[in-house]
Image 1: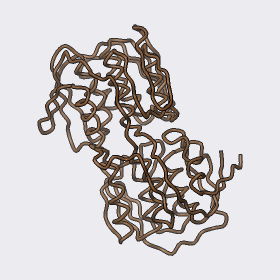
Image 2: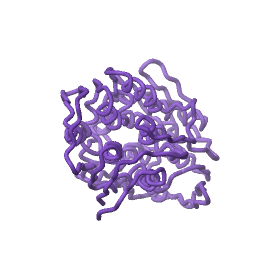
Image 3: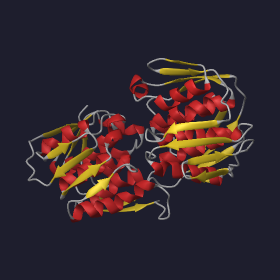
Image 4: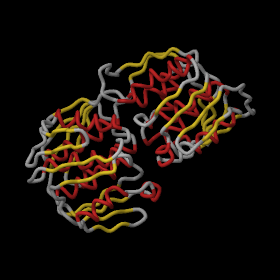
Length: 401
């Protein structure tokens, strides 16, 4: 769907959507508990969460949504399952070791685009432990029981691999060790995983680059509340720097979400050219690139993993931002955006590249200059009500097709 966005200033109060990252983790913790549980403030409409919910349904759970709460019930045991991860990297990487720990022969399907992002870390583990699997361009079938043991992980690839094992190993019979090699990519998400484990009374020790997990543990989860999402909050708070006035509600000031750093980054960039390390805040990359174009510019380092997200978020977004005649230098692992006089073609037409974070970032540009965004529907991945919500706050949005 293509949208025409007119010049707009946003005003009002807004309750930030719940954290997708916490939601994934509480859902798999509940599944591993093997018991009934309740999650409050769970968004069941984003496509990523729908993918994880499909995993629970395939593995014997059902749920009832009432108001803003979901009541999950274990209804049966299964021996074989098919799970549709769609385009959710979290669902795919979390469920691979999980179904193996449960001893359920499972085929996990997804888009070719999802599988093209790779499963190298798990494939290396499968080779080491001689696990049997079948991999196609859009599915993986897992046959073997996960074993307790010493798992060596290239932590530079994605913390999702670490989380997948970290949640799965406690239910096995023996103690296990996860050895993380290299600087942990997006370590903030590992912190969220450890937070959920703590709240579910799962015991582990962290010693430098080692995670030591006891065996024969039971997840204790009766109910949990999903806090507001700082990653999505950034796509709204940005308008407060552009003459708007939005009061954001539902965010915990003491949250462990690393993306709450967006507040610090917005302030730094608005005050002058600065250098920002994105290694622990990759999801903020698109909005920070966009924000820097509108202010004093910035240098972003450790951006390489952004090339392997839902799109190539470096090349694709920068191709769109250069329509503002902004001077941008792109290197393998850094981007330099310089302050320049902006010259905008009329009308400004931009593409989301089917990436939800690019779509929401480019909408900021269009609220200033006006224009058209193509394929806006991709926001359903993480923020399905985004355009309806910004319209309520004063953005002028018109559907074209």
